[in-house]
Length: 236
Length: 226
Image (cartoon, rainbow over all chains, first blue to last red):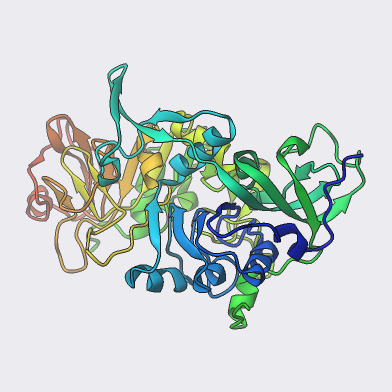
Protein backbone atom coordinates (compact mmCIF):
# COMPACT_ATOMS: atom_id res chain seq x y z
CA UNK A 1 0.00 0.00 0.00
CA UNK A 2 1.61 3.25 -1.13
CA UNK A 3 1.31 5.98 1.47
CA UNK A 4 3.58 9.02 1.10
CA UNK A 5 2.19 10.91 4.07
CA UNK A 6 4.68 12.17 6.65
CA UNK A 7 3.43 13.36 10.03
CA UNK A 8 5.54 16.48 10.54
CA UNK A 9 7.39 19.02 8.43
CA UNK A 10 10.49 18.32 10.57
CA UNK A 11 10.44 14.60 9.67
CA UNK A 12 9.86 15.42 5.98
CA UNK A 13 13.14 17.34 5.62
CA UNK A 14 15.24 15.46 8.24
CA UNK A 15 17.54 13.71 5.75
CA UNK A 16 18.56 16.72 3.63
CA UNK A 17 22.37 16.75 3.85
CA UNK A 18 24.89 19.58 3.75
CA UNK A 19 25.75 20.52 0.18
CA UNK A 20 22.38 19.50 -1.29
CA UNK A 21 20.87 21.23 -4.32
CA UNK A 22 17.27 22.19 -3.56
CA UNK A 23 14.53 23.53 -5.81
CA UNK A 24 12.10 25.70 -3.86
CA UNK A 25 8.71 26.38 -5.43
CA UNK A 26 6.94 29.72 -5.40
CA UNK A 27 6.95 33.08 -7.14
CA UNK A 28 7.42 35.61 -4.39
CA UNK A 29 5.21 34.38 -1.56
CA UNK A 30 2.64 32.73 -3.83
CA UNK A 31 3.26 28.97 -3.71
CA UNK A 32 6.22 29.31 -1.36
CA UNK A 33 6.57 26.25 0.93
CA UNK A 34 7.37 28.46 3.92
CA UNK A 35 6.81 25.81 6.61
CA UNK A 36 9.14 23.34 4.85
CA UNK A 37 11.79 26.06 4.55
CA UNK A 38 11.45 26.89 8.24
CA UNK A 39 11.82 23.19 9.07
CA UNK A 40 15.01 23.19 6.99
CA UNK A 41 16.31 26.17 8.99
CA UNK A 42 15.60 24.23 12.20
CA UNK A 43 17.31 21.16 10.72
CA UNK A 44 20.40 23.21 9.90
CA UNK A 45 21.70 21.72 6.62
CA UNK A 46 24.20 24.15 5.11
CA UNK A 47 26.29 24.80 2.02
CA UNK A 48 23.08 24.48 -0.01
CA UNK A 49 22.48 25.47 -3.62
CA UNK A 50 18.94 26.81 -3.91
CA UNK A 51 16.94 27.25 -7.13
CA UNK A 52 13.99 29.67 -6.87
CA UNK A 53 12.74 32.55 -9.01
CA UNK A 54 13.60 35.06 -6.27
CA UNK A 55 15.55 35.25 -3.02
CA UNK A 56 12.74 35.62 -0.51
CA UNK A 57 11.15 38.53 1.27
CA UNK A 58 11.70 40.12 4.67
CA UNK A 59 13.35 37.74 7.13
CA UNK A 60 11.05 34.75 6.81
CA UNK A 61 10.94 31.74 4.48
CA UNK A 62 13.68 31.62 1.84
CA UNK A 63 15.13 34.95 2.96
CA UNK A 64 15.51 33.53 6.48
CA UNK A 65 17.23 30.39 5.12
CA UNK A 66 19.68 32.64 3.27
CA UNK A 67 20.04 34.87 6.33
CA UNK A 68 20.87 31.83 8.46
CA UNK A 69 23.96 31.33 6.29
CA UNK A 70 22.77 27.94 4.98
CA UNK A 71 22.86 28.84 1.29
CA UNK A 72 26.13 28.87 -0.65
CA UNK A 73 24.63 29.69 -4.03
CA UNK A 74 21.33 30.99 -5.43
CA UNK A 75 20.12 30.23 -8.96
CA UNK A 76 17.33 32.69 -9.76
CA UNK A 77 15.94 35.21 -12.26
CA UNK A 78 15.19 38.12 -9.98
CA UNK A 79 17.03 38.41 -6.66
CA UNK A 80 15.40 41.72 -5.72
CA UNK A 81 11.96 42.66 -4.46
CA UNK A 82 10.38 45.44 -2.47
CA UNK A 83 11.02 43.61 0.81
CA UNK A 84 14.22 41.71 0.10
CA UNK A 85 17.21 42.86 2.08
CA UNK A 86 18.92 39.68 3.31
CA UNK A 87 20.25 38.52 -0.06
CA UNK A 88 21.51 41.93 -1.30
CA UNK A 89 23.53 42.42 1.90
CA UNK A 90 25.17 38.97 1.71
CA UNK A 91 25.78 39.31 -2.04
CA UNK A 92 27.46 42.69 -1.71
CA UNK A 93 29.59 41.26 1.13
CA UNK A 94 30.68 38.43 -1.20
CA UNK A 95 29.15 35.79 1.09
CA UNK A 96 26.79 34.16 -1.42
CA UNK A 97 27.10 33.17 -5.08
CA UNK A 98 24.50 34.13 -7.68
CA UNK A 99 23.70 32.51 -11.02
CA UNK A 100 21.27 34.79 -12.82
CA UNK A 101 18.98 32.99 -15.30
CA UNK A 102 16.15 34.57 -17.30
CA UNK A 103 12.81 33.43 -15.93
CA UNK A 104 11.74 31.47 -19.01
CA UNK A 105 15.14 29.87 -19.38
CA UNK A 106 15.02 28.93 -15.70
CA UNK A 107 11.59 27.34 -16.16
CA UNK A 108 12.67 25.50 -19.31
CA UNK A 109 15.94 24.31 -17.73
CA UNK A 110 13.89 22.80 -14.90
CA UNK A 111 11.33 21.32 -17.29
CA UNK A 112 14.12 19.86 -19.42
CA UNK A 113 15.89 18.49 -16.35
CA UNK A 114 12.70 16.73 -15.29
CA UNK A 115 12.16 15.37 -18.80
CA UNK A 116 15.64 13.90 -19.17
CA UNK A 117 16.69 16.50 -21.74
CA UNK A 118 20.29 17.50 -20.98
CA UNK A 119 20.34 20.75 -22.97
CA UNK A 120 18.39 22.83 -25.48
CA UNK A 121 18.79 25.90 -27.68
CA UNK A 122 16.93 29.14 -27.04
CA UNK A 123 16.95 32.67 -28.48
CA UNK A 124 16.67 34.19 -25.00
CA UNK A 125 19.85 36.15 -24.03
CA UNK A 126 21.22 36.24 -27.61
CA UNK A 127 23.05 39.56 -28.04
CA UNK A 128 23.07 40.27 -24.30
CA UNK A 129 25.76 40.00 -21.59
CA UNK A 130 24.04 36.85 -20.28
CA UNK A 131 24.98 35.00 -23.49
CA UNK A 132 28.69 35.29 -22.64
CA UNK A 133 30.42 31.94 -22.54
CA UNK A 134 27.40 30.07 -23.88
CA UNK A 135 27.69 27.82 -26.91
CA UNK A 136 25.99 29.57 -29.86
CA UNK A 137 24.41 28.10 -32.95
CA UNK A 138 22.64 29.40 -36.05
CA UNK A 139 19.49 27.36 -36.74
CA UNK A 140 17.28 28.19 -39.74
CA UNK A 141 18.77 31.68 -39.92
CA UNK A 142 18.33 32.62 -36.27
CA UNK A 143 20.93 32.74 -33.48
CA UNK A 144 20.46 30.60 -30.39
CA UNK A 145 22.43 29.75 -27.26
CA UNK A 146 22.74 26.39 -25.55
CA UNK A 147 21.23 26.05 -22.08
CA UNK A 148 21.55 23.01 -19.82
CA UNK A 149 18.76 21.18 -18.03
CA UNK A 150 18.59 21.58 -14.26
CA UNK A 151 17.98 18.87 -11.72
CA UNK A 152 18.11 18.87 -7.93
CA UNK A 153 18.52 16.49 -5.01
CA UNK A 154 15.34 17.78 -3.36
CA UNK A 155 12.34 19.92 -4.25
CA UNK A 156 10.30 21.75 -1.60
CA UNK A 157 6.78 22.25 -2.92
CA UNK A 158 3.52 23.84 -1.79
CA UNK A 159 0.13 22.76 -3.08
CA UNK A 160 -3.55 23.06 -2.23
CA UNK A 161 -4.70 19.43 -2.10
CA UNK A 162 -2.86 16.12 -2.15
CA UNK A 163 -3.75 12.50 -1.61
CA UNK A 164 -1.68 9.84 0.15
CA UNK A 165 -0.34 8.58 -3.17
CA UNK A 166 1.05 12.06 -3.94
CA UNK A 167 -1.32 13.40 -6.58
CA UNK A 168 -1.41 17.21 -6.38
CA UNK A 169 -3.55 20.17 -7.33
CA UNK A 170 -2.62 23.80 -6.77
CA UNK A 171 -4.32 27.14 -6.08
CA UNK A 172 -4.41 29.87 -8.75
CA UNK A 173 -1.02 31.52 -9.44
CA UNK A 174 0.53 29.68 -6.49
CA UNK A 175 1.12 26.89 -9.03
CA UNK A 176 4.00 28.70 -10.83
CA UNK A 177 7.28 26.73 -10.62
CA UNK A 178 5.94 23.99 -8.34
CA UNK A 179 4.78 21.36 -10.90
CA UNK A 180 7.97 21.50 -13.00
CA UNK A 181 10.17 21.34 -9.89
CA UNK A 182 8.32 18.18 -8.80
CA UNK A 183 9.59 16.50 -11.96
CA UNK A 184 13.24 17.62 -11.68
CA UNK A 185 14.21 16.55 -8.15
CA UNK A 186 15.35 13.16 -6.88
CA UNK A 187 13.21 13.60 -3.76
CA UNK A 188 10.10 15.80 -3.93
CA UNK A 189 8.70 16.95 -0.59
CA UNK A 190 5.25 18.57 -0.63
CA UNK A 191 3.39 20.63 1.93
CA UNK A 192 -0.33 20.68 1.23
CA UNK A 193 -3.16 22.65 2.75
CA UNK A 194 -5.27 19.50 2.79
CA UNK A 195 -4.79 15.76 2.39
CA UNK A 196 -7.84 14.18 0.77
CA UNK A 197 -8.88 10.54 0.31
CA UNK A 198 -7.24 8.66 -2.56
CA UNK A 199 -9.81 8.88 -5.37
CA UNK A 200 -11.25 12.20 -4.20
CA UNK A 201 -9.20 14.16 -6.76
CA UNK A 202 -10.69 13.89 -10.25
CA UNK A 203 -8.05 12.26 -12.48
CA UNK A 204 -8.96 14.85 -15.16
CA UNK A 205 -7.95 17.65 -12.78
CA UNK A 206 -4.74 16.32 -11.24
CA UNK A 207 -1.90 18.70 -12.13
CA UNK A 208 1.04 16.74 -10.69
CA UNK A 209 0.69 12.94 -11.06
CA UNK A 210 1.98 11.04 -8.02
CA UNK A 211 4.98 9.52 -9.82
CA UNK A 212 6.82 12.83 -9.25
CA UNK A 213 6.09 13.04 -5.52
CA UNK A 214 7.87 11.29 -2.63
CA UNK A 215 6.60 12.86 0.60
CA UNK A 216 3.42 14.71 1.53
CA UNK A 217 2.90 16.62 4.75
CA UNK A 218 -0.25 18.50 5.71
CA UNK A 219 0.06 22.16 6.74
CA UNK A 220 -3.58 23.12 7.11
CA UNK A 221 -3.09 26.82 7.77
CA UNK A 222 0.13 27.92 6.12
CA UNK A 223 1.53 31.31 7.06
CA UNK A 224 1.23 34.18 4.61
CA UNK A 225 4.70 35.68 4.28
CA UNK A 226 3.52 39.24 3.60
CA UNK A 227 1.49 39.18 6.82
CA UNK A 228 4.52 37.96 8.80
CA UNK A 229 6.66 40.68 7.22
CA UNK A 230 4.04 43.34 8.03
CA UNK A 231 4.24 42.23 11.67
CA UNK A 232 8.04 42.39 11.60
CA UNK A 233 8.44 38.64 12.19
CA UNK A 234 11.93 37.19 11.80
CA UNK A 235 12.44 33.42 11.62
CA UNK A 236 13.50 31.66 13.75
CA UNK B 1 -5.39 74.94 -26.00
CA UNK B 2 -2.01 74.80 -24.35
CA UNK B 3 -1.72 71.02 -24.53
CA UNK B 4 1.80 69.90 -25.26
CA UNK B 5 2.88 66.30 -25.52
CA UNK B 6 1.12 63.20 -24.21
CA UNK B 7 0.50 62.27 -20.57
CA UNK B 8 1.27 58.73 -19.34
CA UNK B 9 -2.40 57.84 -19.84
CA UNK B 10 -2.44 59.30 -23.35
CA UNK B 11 0.71 57.38 -24.24
CA UNK B 12 -0.99 54.19 -23.05
CA UNK B 13 -4.07 55.10 -25.09
CA UNK B 14 -1.94 55.45 -28.23
CA UNK B 15 -0.54 51.95 -27.63
CA UNK B 16 -4.01 50.48 -27.09
CA UNK B 17 -5.19 51.96 -30.40
CA UNK B 18 -2.46 49.99 -32.22
CA UNK B 19 -3.29 46.58 -30.70
CA UNK B 20 -5.66 44.54 -32.90
CA UNK B 21 -8.85 42.99 -31.58
CA UNK B 22 -8.37 39.51 -30.15
CA UNK B 23 -4.69 39.97 -29.33
CA UNK B 24 -2.94 38.06 -26.57
CA UNK B 25 -1.06 40.77 -24.69
CA UNK B 26 1.63 40.81 -22.01
CA UNK B 27 2.13 44.13 -20.22
CA UNK B 28 5.27 45.12 -18.34
CA UNK B 29 5.23 46.81 -14.96
CA UNK B 30 4.54 50.58 -14.73
CA UNK B 31 3.18 52.70 -17.61
CA UNK B 32 2.44 49.58 -19.75
CA UNK B 33 -0.17 48.52 -17.16
CA UNK B 34 -2.22 51.64 -18.05
CA UNK B 35 -2.98 50.15 -21.49
CA UNK B 36 -5.83 48.12 -19.93
CA UNK B 37 -7.75 51.37 -19.28
CA UNK B 38 -7.90 52.31 -22.97
CA UNK B 39 -9.05 49.22 -24.86
CA UNK B 40 -10.96 50.69 -27.82
CA UNK B 41 -14.70 50.07 -28.03
CA UNK B 42 -15.46 46.77 -29.73
CA UNK B 43 -12.03 45.20 -29.14
CA UNK B 44 -11.06 42.51 -26.65
CA UNK B 45 -7.51 41.81 -25.47
CA UNK B 46 -6.58 38.75 -23.41
CA UNK B 47 -3.85 39.50 -20.88
CA UNK B 48 -1.10 37.03 -20.05
CA UNK B 49 1.08 37.25 -16.98
CA UNK B 50 4.32 35.26 -16.76
CA UNK B 51 3.54 33.69 -13.41
CA UNK B 52 0.84 31.49 -14.88
CA UNK B 53 -2.43 33.25 -15.72
CA UNK B 54 -4.09 33.84 -19.10
CA UNK B 55 -7.16 36.06 -18.83
CA UNK B 56 -5.87 38.38 -16.13
CA UNK B 57 -8.36 40.96 -14.90
CA UNK B 58 -7.95 44.24 -13.01
CA UNK B 59 -6.87 44.67 -9.40
CA UNK B 60 -9.50 43.44 -6.93
CA UNK B 61 -11.52 45.81 -4.79
CA UNK B 62 -9.65 46.59 -1.56
CA UNK B 63 -10.10 43.82 0.98
CA UNK B 64 -10.60 41.19 -1.74
CA UNK B 65 -6.89 40.61 -2.43
CA UNK B 66 -5.74 36.97 -2.61
CA UNK B 67 -2.00 36.43 -1.99
CA UNK B 68 -2.19 33.41 -4.31
CA UNK B 69 -3.67 35.43 -7.22
CA UNK B 70 -0.99 37.89 -8.32
CA UNK B 71 0.70 39.22 -11.45
CA UNK B 72 4.35 39.18 -12.50
CA UNK B 73 4.86 42.39 -10.50
CA UNK B 74 3.58 40.41 -7.48
CA UNK B 75 0.51 42.66 -7.17
CA UNK B 76 -2.98 41.28 -6.47
CA UNK B 77 -5.09 40.81 -9.60
CA UNK B 78 -8.29 39.02 -10.61
CA UNK B 79 -9.09 36.34 -13.18
CA UNK B 80 -11.62 37.07 -15.94
CA UNK B 81 -14.30 34.53 -16.90
CA UNK B 82 -12.57 32.08 -19.25
CA UNK B 83 -9.19 32.54 -17.58
CA UNK B 84 -6.77 29.66 -16.99
CA UNK B 85 -3.90 28.91 -14.63
CA UNK B 86 -0.77 26.99 -15.65
CA UNK B 87 2.79 26.37 -14.52
CA UNK B 88 5.88 28.34 -15.49
CA UNK B 89 6.94 25.87 -18.16
CA UNK B 90 3.63 26.34 -19.96
CA UNK B 91 3.62 30.07 -19.36
CA UNK B 92 6.97 30.51 -21.09
CA UNK B 93 5.94 28.10 -23.83
CA UNK B 94 3.33 30.74 -24.65
CA UNK B 95 6.03 33.44 -24.67
CA UNK B 96 8.95 31.61 -26.28
CA UNK B 97 6.78 29.66 -28.69
CA UNK B 98 5.54 32.89 -30.29
CA UNK B 99 1.96 32.54 -29.07
CA UNK B 100 1.75 35.98 -27.42
CA UNK B 101 0.97 38.68 -30.00
CA UNK B 102 2.06 41.88 -28.30
CA UNK B 103 4.27 42.78 -25.36
CA UNK B 104 4.43 46.35 -24.06
CA UNK B 105 7.52 47.19 -22.01
CA UNK B 106 9.16 50.18 -20.38
CA UNK B 107 12.79 50.98 -21.04
CA UNK B 108 15.93 52.71 -19.88
CA UNK B 109 17.43 52.94 -23.40
CA UNK B 110 16.43 51.95 -26.89
CA UNK B 111 18.65 52.10 -29.94
CA UNK B 112 17.84 53.07 -33.54
CA UNK B 113 18.23 49.38 -34.45
CA UNK B 114 15.59 48.30 -31.93
CA UNK B 115 18.03 47.10 -29.29
CA UNK B 116 16.40 47.29 -25.86
CA UNK B 117 18.16 47.92 -22.54
CA UNK B 118 15.73 47.80 -19.63
CA UNK B 119 17.15 45.48 -16.96
CA UNK B 120 20.41 46.90 -15.66
CA UNK B 121 22.48 50.08 -15.74
CA UNK B 122 25.57 47.88 -15.60
CA UNK B 123 26.77 49.73 -12.48
CA UNK B 124 29.45 47.64 -10.75
CA UNK B 125 27.52 47.39 -7.44
CA UNK B 126 24.16 46.60 -9.11
CA UNK B 127 22.67 43.20 -8.33
CA UNK B 128 21.68 41.69 -11.68
CA UNK B 129 17.95 40.95 -11.89
CA UNK B 130 16.44 40.11 -15.26
CA UNK B 131 13.13 38.36 -14.56
CA UNK B 132 11.25 37.46 -17.75
CA UNK B 133 12.22 40.46 -19.89
CA UNK B 134 14.78 38.63 -22.06
CA UNK B 135 12.32 35.81 -22.74
CA UNK B 136 9.57 38.28 -23.68
CA UNK B 137 11.66 40.25 -26.18
CA UNK B 138 13.03 37.05 -27.73
CA UNK B 139 9.67 35.31 -28.04
CA UNK B 140 6.73 37.70 -28.40
CA UNK B 141 5.74 38.55 -32.00
CA UNK B 142 5.55 42.35 -31.59
CA UNK B 143 7.38 44.39 -28.96
CA UNK B 144 6.11 47.92 -28.25
CA UNK B 145 8.01 50.18 -25.89
CA UNK B 146 6.28 52.91 -23.91
CA UNK B 147 8.47 55.41 -22.10
CA UNK B 148 9.18 59.06 -21.42
CA UNK B 149 11.32 60.35 -24.28
CA UNK B 150 14.07 61.53 -21.91
CA UNK B 151 15.19 60.77 -18.36
CA UNK B 152 14.24 63.11 -15.52
CA UNK B 153 17.52 64.94 -16.13
CA UNK B 154 16.71 65.41 -19.82
CA UNK B 155 18.95 62.72 -21.32
CA UNK B 156 17.48 60.98 -24.38
CA UNK B 157 16.43 57.38 -23.91
CA UNK B 158 16.48 57.01 -27.70
CA UNK B 159 20.09 56.51 -28.71
CA UNK B 160 22.30 55.42 -31.60
CA UNK B 161 23.80 52.58 -29.54
CA UNK B 162 22.78 51.48 -26.04
CA UNK B 163 25.42 52.03 -23.36
CA UNK B 164 23.52 49.89 -20.84
CA UNK B 165 23.57 46.06 -21.06
CA UNK B 166 21.04 44.80 -23.62
CA UNK B 167 17.85 42.92 -22.88
CA UNK B 168 17.59 41.95 -26.54
CA UNK B 169 19.08 42.89 -29.89
CA UNK B 170 16.89 44.30 -32.69
CA UNK B 171 13.66 43.32 -30.96
CA UNK B 172 11.50 46.48 -30.75
CA UNK B 173 8.99 47.48 -33.46
CA UNK B 174 7.75 50.83 -32.21
CA UNK B 175 8.23 53.26 -29.34
CA UNK B 176 5.56 55.49 -27.79
CA UNK B 177 6.87 58.48 -25.85
CA UNK B 178 5.39 61.65 -24.40
CA UNK B 179 6.54 63.44 -27.57
CA UNK B 180 5.99 61.07 -30.48
CA UNK B 181 5.36 57.61 -31.85
CA UNK B 182 8.45 56.35 -33.63
CA UNK B 183 8.84 53.22 -35.75
CA UNK B 184 12.05 51.22 -35.79
CA UNK B 185 12.87 50.50 -39.41
CA UNK B 186 15.90 49.00 -41.16
CA UNK B 187 17.07 52.56 -41.78
CA UNK B 188 16.64 53.60 -38.11
CA UNK B 189 14.15 55.72 -36.13
CA UNK B 190 11.33 56.93 -38.36
CA UNK B 191 8.68 59.31 -37.00
CA UNK B 192 5.15 57.94 -37.21
CA UNK B 193 3.18 60.56 -35.32
CA UNK B 194 3.83 63.70 -33.29
CA UNK B 195 2.10 64.39 -29.97
CA UNK B 196 -0.07 67.52 -29.91
CA UNK B 197 1.94 70.75 -29.79
CA UNK B 198 5.23 68.99 -30.50
CA UNK B 199 7.34 69.79 -33.57
CA UNK B 200 9.53 67.43 -35.58
CA UNK B 201 12.54 69.64 -34.77
CA UNK B 202 11.84 69.37 -31.05
CA UNK B 203 11.73 65.57 -31.18
CA UNK B 204 14.95 65.54 -33.25
CA UNK B 205 16.63 67.76 -30.65
CA UNK B 206 15.63 65.39 -27.84
CA UNK B 207 16.64 62.21 -29.69
CA UNK B 208 20.27 61.11 -29.46
CA UNK B 209 20.22 59.48 -32.91
CA UNK B 210 19.07 60.45 -36.39
CA UNK B 211 15.28 60.74 -36.71
CA UNK B 212 13.75 60.32 -40.14
CA UNK B 213 10.53 62.09 -41.17
CA UNK B 214 7.40 60.04 -41.86
CA UNK B 215 7.19 58.39 -45.26
CA UNK B 216 3.48 59.18 -45.58
CA UNK B 217 1.62 62.38 -44.79
CA UNK B 218 1.55 62.75 -41.01
CA UNK B 219 -1.73 61.39 -39.64
CA UNK B 220 -3.90 63.65 -37.50
CA UNK B 221 -3.07 63.17 -33.83
CA UNK B 222 -5.57 61.04 -31.91
CA UNK B 223 -7.31 59.83 -35.04
CA UNK B 224 -8.57 56.35 -34.30
CA UNK B 225 -6.28 53.82 -35.92
CA UNK B 226 -7.16 50.33 -36.91
